[in-house]
Length: 331
Image (tube, rainbow, N blue to C red; front, side):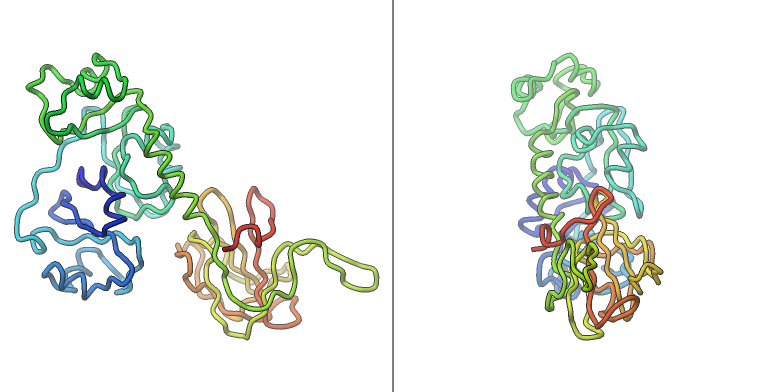
């Protein structure tokens, strides 16, 4: 993945511009209103080329998707060679089901170390499969040497030891340096990138309403009549049978089938950080276990299966292994 992608992905997310990448492709962040046809026309390539190059199974695009645009076809030139990472680094291509957290465990690295090697990543939880990430040898931060910048400048800006910097990057003399070269600053914490990604995670980890309808039962104790009561662990939202229900938040389906606990047709979705949402009483389930779903993607249809007195959605939010009032999370 290109140096520009690693260091300027935030600009991409804001502007929708493409940047050069290794392997002769450019990377485009899909914006609202973008279509395959419009993108193909913009960069003078065919829709079929886009589909084949990205191995797309569908022609639908969503804002924030990363799309590879064949560089030679789009720009009419040959991609420049990508700067090599410093010694001790290796590449990791993100596989289905892998997350930053799983990479931390696999490589025995901290979050700061992973982010420090890849300070331009756009998210901690929603990175696309196939993204190339640098795996560092330890704690520190990657930077690109700017024109006219020297090692002494980096020492002053980041407070890094010049000896440690030279050793980590095998710098023998100033003649070894060139603009755009990737340099590893050992021991430096990527505070700006960590703060930015924390803000992104806060925005991403919000829940939208899975369906709009009339609230018929709230979270908490409820009276059943005859002096009896129980605890209602979610929200009941009444809507006509067959009404589409969407994922309140992006995640992975962990259960999709019949529940013997009164939920009827039930779907559970696991989200970043271990939170779960439950969707009960479906007339039809439209997802399967292991499927990754986007926020707002239809996962089932309103029904009255299980213990139910009419068509509605029973919706639960679980964090820390127990249910919480969904109204605290929904926006």
